[in-house]
Amino acid sequence: MASSAASHPPIDFVRPYTTVDVVIFSVVDGALKVLLVQRPASGSEPFPGLWALPGGFVDVAQDSDLQACANRKLREKTNVASPYLEQLGSWGGRSRDPRGWSATHVYFALIAALPLTLAKGANAADVAWFEVDALGDEPELAFDHSEILRAAVERLRGKVEYTSLPAFLLPEPFTLPQLQQVYETVLGRPVDKSGFRTRMLAAQFLREAGHVEGPSNRPAMGYRLADRSAPVIFPRTFSPRG
Amino acid sequence: MASSAASHPPIDFVRPYTTVDVVIFSVVDGALKVLLVQRPASGSEPFPGLWALPGGFVDVAQDSDLQACANRKLREKTNVASPYLEQLGSWGGRSRDPRGWSATHVYFALIAALPLTLAKGANAADVAWFEVDALGDEPELAFDHSEILRAAVERLRGKVEYTSLPAFLLPEPFTLPQLQQVYETVLGRPVDKSGFRTRMLAAQFLREAGHVEGPSNRPAMGYRLADRSAPVIFPRTFSPRG
DNA sequence: GAAATAGTGTCTGTAAGACATTATATT
DNA sequence: AATATAATGTCTTACAGACACTATTTC
Image (tube, rainbow over all chains, first blue to last red):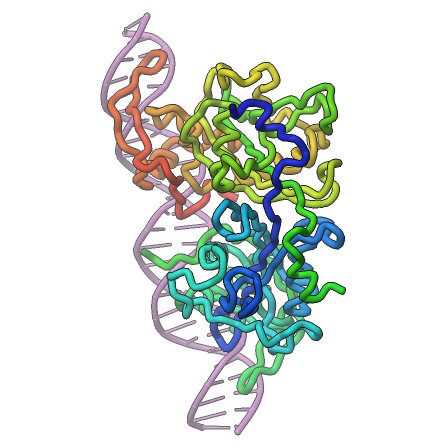
């Protein structure tokens, strides 16, 4: 039955829906937040009124590939041009969308906190930042987006332990104390200042950019990323003594 | 133009092809190899005669989700029931398949070396193991499979530095010297014996399973995995002194 | 000069890497 | 006994973590 005939089905085989969703993180008001959009309360679409990850169908006319599609979704919601964008994975199956077999390609983005002046023409009313730790474990989002969000947070927290990812959550130039702040916010625990600085500077990914005056007191050195295309991987993890 | 109307297109929007491919690794004859299938030499299908990753279209009738589909592809080619299987990522775009916009969900699998007694009914003639390091950098495989394979090898080698993944490449029970062999094969460099043993045993993922007689000389302790569902993550990396 | 934040110095324990040695089997 | 491989021991050194201290600004 499931022989080579099934593995090479005709070209007009039933095709699942193909979508792209984006998990957009930022640190706003000292907390890790994710951008969600509210689904229309009425109409024929599934999960009316529920919050969901920004995303939607791939448009074969305008999207040349998946990453371009993700970038488009992100731009439509945030007006951010060049964020950190990495693929998280894909989720697909028969039951995640009541309309039929569907598969979504999920990206996760890190952007610097921006005022809620979101996309111009877009209906910004149905877009909001949600604190990650305030969302419970129960599925509250549309589709399987709660599960996807959990995976994204896990990936982010995991990678923060040994990469320079948090630098993408800050507007440039930023100071080392600010960067440490962000690490602590994302990780949810304090980090030793001396070790932190040694590590960051040893990793060679920061370029000095002149002093920056803070709210008061001694000004700190400002830094920019030497390479905005990819994070740096540290040789060891941040974990404190067991 | 690209407003909310475009992000919620009608349900009969043009749907890309949805496929699943599997990168199947094993250590055969002391080398890291990948399983490839040869595309039919004649007919209307693209890339005739070229080698490709095993995979194909999602069958919405029999595949309940992506992972199930990947498992099916793997079973069809190798008869292996419960391998290590993890998602690698997805590749999609307008030009990777000449038949049209397509997206593939890629998994990578680790299986113990098995004789080339592959799937029974399957046409085993067009299936073969290829040494990973013998494949050049030029795209030689069908579709974008050369690029996908590169990503898979990179992921595997990367994770081997700090996880117990190579244990899934051996039939149980295996000995620590055998496991070290596999690490060295995948990493392509020698590893210190003493440190290796300390690390493996400290990670608590092995269960003793009685002595195993090798080809000659002193027999070694055999081990089985305490948990075959997931690898163990080591606190540090294998990297030698810089 | 008091206060607050930025930045540096010093000590110590842990554990990885390197290499030497002992243990246990086969022929 | 000789040999081959398994398993353990010892030494050294890098470096993260902890914490104390100094430096530089504002008010």
